[in-house]
Length: 216
Image 1 (tube, rainbow, N blue to C red):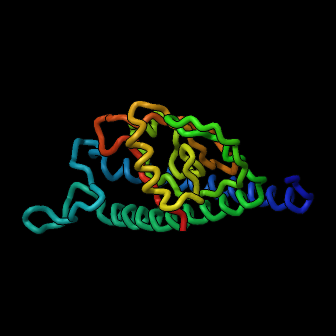
Image 2 (cartoon, rainbow, N blue to C red):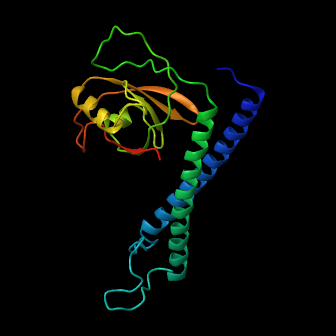
């Protein structure tokens, strides 16, 4: 598959849109972090932090005198607005990434499973996102493998979106390959990235340390 001038133009527009949305996401994250830090940090003279959901009255029912209640209300309201905007923005990013993926040429499904050797010829078929990695736990095999939040899973071993009940197939593959590397492909910022993950106990839940949400 070769790019046409029209396809290249659409990709440039989508990449520009994705870069703009990513910049907005980064700005929201930075603002939310700053507000969260302010609300959860002790006062200058060691007063208790205002908190994210801490009541504005003390144990006796009187308004707290150690915080600027109006300012804290504004900060909490803004934090709630950011959370709402962030969810909508992430949905836009996901949709834009999918649109951009549709403009890309097919990616060969040439990644074998970690534990199975076959003599069959490699087939070539277009990969499509089957799930979004919407939670990555620090220190987990997923984090060690270099998986990033909101990566789109294209292939896991030989499991793809064309695999019947692909989530069950992934679970079975993981169970058969504890302490064995499994190759995988993710879509990240319009680029397909090949990774390798090794399922293993790590001190948290499961053997991967990530959460998959099937694409709608």
